[in-house]
Structures are given as C-alpha cells and as structure tokens.
Image (cartoon, rainbow, N blue to C red; front, top):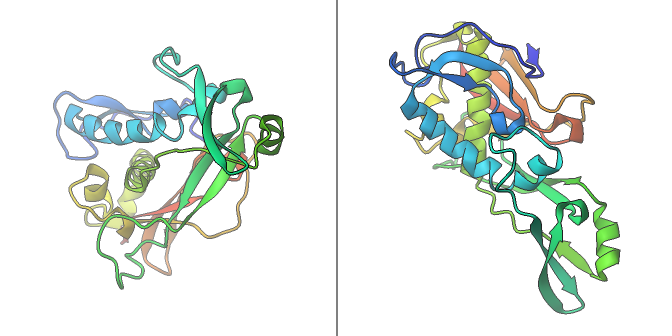
Length: 261
C-alpha cells in the first residue's frame, strides 16, 4: 500500500496508538505538519506521547531541514516568522576558511540524508545500541553550488548541519508506524509492534529496526513524500518504507514494524 499523504482524514482511533491511554487524546499527523503532512489520524495520541514524538520532530525540522522547509514553503504554524533572514556558509578561499551569511535566495541548500546499515534485527552481530551513520546522500536545493562557489571566489563550500541520526531515525520510524496504524496494517502482525519502544525512547535500539534501503535512488515527480507498507513473507516481517522529499532522489528508509502472523 502507498500513500502520498494528501489531506486524508482517517477514522478516529479512540486511544493513544503509542501507550494505549484514552484521556486527553489529540490528532496525530502521520507525517509531521512541518513537512506539509496533512493526513490526520484523529483521537490517536495522548499529550505525553505527543510531546515525546513532537520533540524528536522538532530536532529534525528546526535543525538540518529548516532551510529547505523555508525554501520550499512547506507548512509552518508560525508562517516562518522566526526563520533566519540569512544562513551561514563555510567558505574556503585558498588556505583561509571563513563563514559568510547569505540570504535564502543566494544560499545553496545541501541537505544531507544519513546512510544507515540494514536493521540490526536482520544481522545482530556486533550491534549494541543507537544507530550507526555510515555516510550521506546529499541533495541540493536552491542555487547551484558550483555557481555559488564561483561567485564567492571560493575553492570549497560546506554547511554545518548538526545532524542527530537517532532523532532522524525515530522520526522515520514514527511516520511508518503511524501510517501502518491508519491503514490497519498492524492487524497482520502477531504480538506488539517491535519498533514502538524505540520510537518513544523507552529503548535505545532504533538501529535494530531502521535502516537505509539500498535500491538505486529514484525520484517520484509530484510526490513530496512517499510511504509504503509491505509484507515481506520471505523474512516474515511487516516493513515500512519511508522516503522524504521523494521528488528529489532522496534515499528510502526501511522500518521493521513487526512479525507477520
């Protein structure tokens, strides 16, 4: 099953999909609102769990993804009133490094997507905790970096993004899990969802459940983000497949949700 996360409103759940609480329920955006997520799951998260998942989303959206969100005018509850007017770019001119501040229309946005190993659940040898980042796929938005390099008379440019891989992986897992709940895909698993404790931070093993899908990079025109859920009968697992900025050849991430019946 696939969903491009338009304005679909699912049926109310009536309990928190994370902890089971039934009081003070709120709606859950399957994809974060700040990524223009408009598919809503009503009455599906309690205030405590909303704070936990919302904090991780904030770390990602107000950190590495902030500039591209403003550039692409994704949804924002504050309408970007507090967004910086200029952004820092590290520039090498000869042997001298300096930081220049550029307005967004002159700023080459380099969004680094982490590359993770396959989920350690599939090969637990040597795994301890957290998630390991083995590299990056860099997607460019805005002005061409080569043109900016030439205009600034620089030999190289770079950006400090402060990526936090565990938070990023937890957000990816939350998106896959919430979509699976909305689509009733969890009816196909036995026992509890495997990834849920890591989403909530109750266990430090997000790398056991989340990894980068190694297929060739592919863009899907007209789809800002993309989510799939599929049953891997060979491995006996329910898998979530999440691709943010799927119109820009960003990597896909696999999330082990649970064991199939």
